[in-house]
Image 1 (cartoon, rainbow, N blue to C red):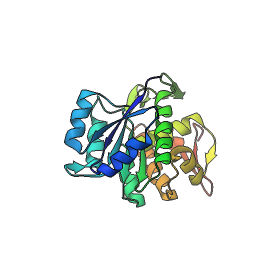
Image 2 (image 1 turned 180 degrees about the vertical axis):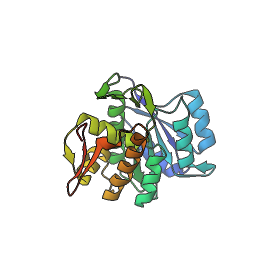
Image 3 (image 1 turned 120 degrees about the vertical axis):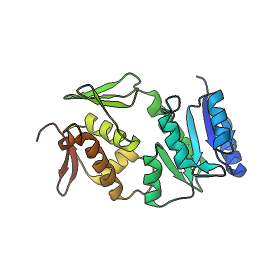
Image 4 (image 1 turned 135 degrees about the horizontal axis):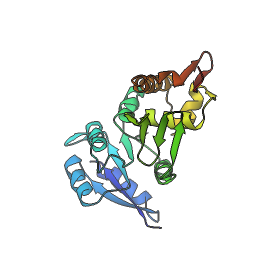
Length: 229
């Protein structure tokens, strides 16, 4: 099995060296960029399997760069892990909404970092051709696209993950804490408000197709995905 290429976009040499050392004898090859300009050159030369992205960079903002990557066809599907000292819940939500697949706060354990990378790459590699269908709602796992009656529904990364979970576990009630464990599953201490924020965004996306009622609030229990009213 060929080694996975990981691009780290980080201006602190000590952190790059720490990650490089942790990859010794691993199945990962680390490519380094000190900033966004250098990262663009690395991406043009070879598309990595995953990007480790710092928030604060000398030549720009990691959040804006994540949005740029998601908006560019060539890089839109590359998994992104944000590496940052920003630890507030709103910062995490901002990072995830920008397109990051995961969010790790500095200082971090290299063992945890490797475990997160492996988990994301497993998810990225599996079920390449899987299509999930519930009624007229179709989710293509390979392309990360969702359609209703042939029309594309635009979703953020977390809303997409929530919908995948709901569509594969229809008619079951999940509490906010269960959804945090099932969908986020990143070891971070997210508040339950995080779930409500992304549920609201998912409903808003489905509302344009009159499908927001698929996500049902079960008072005192949590949420359920169901075709039944």
